Amino acid sequence: MTLRRGVVVLTGAGVSADSGVATFRGPGGLWEGHRLEEVATPEAWARDPVLVWRFYQERRARLSTVQPNDAHRALVRLERRVRDADGLFTLVTQNVDDLHERAGSRELLHMHGELTRLRCERCDYGREDRASVDPDAFLPCPECGHERLRPDIVWFGEVPFHLPAIDRAMAACTHFLAIGTSGVVYPAAGLLMLAREAGARTWVNSLEAPDNLHPDDTFLPGRAADVVPGLVEELCADWGLG
Ligand code: APR
Image (cartoon, rainbow, N blue to C red; front, side, top):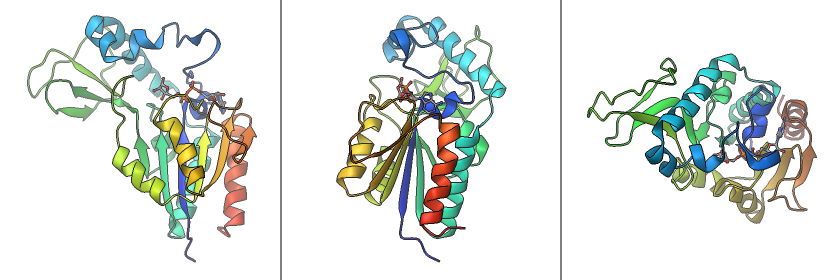
């Protein structure tokens, strides 16, 4: 059968929380003991690259200690079933961990970058690198010789990645799911409204109601690992996907 659906899923830190990865916002507004502006801005990198590098190297090292959870796996099932029925599926994640791809997601856009990648800030060199996690050793650029590669992360004040591809997915979106995101960081937070205003049906899962929630959204409170598998089964049953 052919499915006339454009499914877009936006995930945030909450989807990885059930795998033991810390979320960004919470009591006190501190992120693993740091204010965001101390470690997640280009100014911080210019001012104190040792602190910023150590912070990201520790997060890169921790990737190998966490595993995808039932929410990541359910989204893989949704993607496979939608695509098998010739529907369109795009997973847009704000997360910089690699849990979606390790679970098996294929049509995946990391709009805030990836911990598993490093890039040069002088030339356009970039590479996948999971192995170099020494918190005290900068890595020089093998292309231009610049003294230090940076994490391939979109910091505050920088332009998110993949915006044209996200626009294309949103233009075809009939069903939109926002999972585990507080809805405060734009442009990601604006996608829910864009989808709603274009007439898509919208579902939101989070522990508490996010800032951008609207009465027309179907809000499913709870842990993503508990809620998302059931939602996926329900959608697939509604759409007649086995
Ligand atoms: N299941 C579902 N949702 C959860 C869970 C869970 N187990 N645990 C927490 N949440 C929800 C919280 O209720 C909150 O709404 O996940 C959300 C996490 O919000 P943030 O920490 O703000 O994460 P996110 O929305 O992804 O942050 C956006 O901010 O700092 C930047 O670039 C960074 O990509 C990040 C962006």
